[in-house]
Image (cartoon, rainbow, N blue to C red):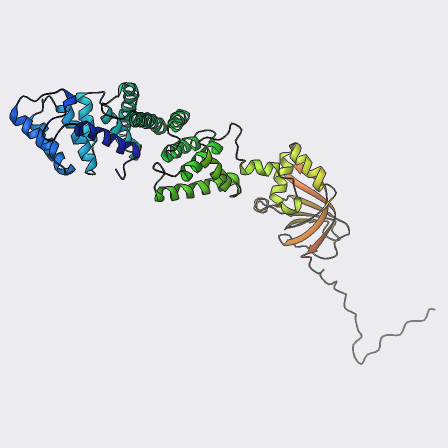
Length: 438
């Protein structure tokens, strides 16, 4: 475990507080458990009084092996679990033993749920299903036992804070279980409940955003980006560590730009998410496609491919582009010559403009009628520039028809006309005289 969450630290404090009430050398009075064997009592008290977490773990482990049926077995296991965590060790083994002794031991349930939340899952893990099922059972049992969790000598305000954080942890664990099973709406629901209880916990908002963006078939981008933004912007004891915040901030920026098309509005989103946990009911971040759909068409700023797609798709926007922006208007293009008719003094030229069209033999997507017969040559396969007035189009396969056109660049000079050679009389001989008529 790389770091303890705030909840885990609180739980450790609560667990230790049960042992802090008794004077040194005595077992806790509130347990109302008495060890009758003097030697057992001596070993147990020695473990209680040990200050080093690592050494205390060893002493308690030895005690439990020597006295496996001790009346204080649950207490010893609980203290061993806490000591293991304080020493930076894995306390899950002791937590599971605790639940065998007492299935409702709240501290063991909390520890297992927190460790589950902080341990990456892999579906390739042979124990994946077992880990997920155990986490589900632990969280459900924790929620069931939580109302009756009232340890003595804990100030009411601290107990309430702990129980809220604990409930949120159990809900997050259930959300993580649903996420592991690809049950995304169920995961989002559990994370949302947890976030409502602990609105300043950055980790729960990250998990909420992760579940929302993974929903299929329609990811909830707007709500997910809000949750990621809040996770990044939260400060205080439940904020993300600097490295984690930086990583999620980079992911937020990348995802926002990919979805929205630019960083416009991102900083405003962050400030909004910082000020309140959840977005307003009508909150929406426009997607790139939605933004494009609201933009007025300008053929001068559109690629020929975009023009072709818009016109071929038809509908109100395609009609708006054609009637309002293109029909009867000049259009400058460049493309590959596909055919020229007739061969001499050509009046019609067909071009392939789109790369996809160019890749198909004899395919064309623009038909240009020239204003004047062509005086030069246009070799098939050559790329040239041309201009014409938009007259009509065919949607499938798409062909744009231009009239009153002109090839503005790329026309080659016509081949020179060869004249027949003039026959001359041989040198030194005179041409025969014409005969006079009889």
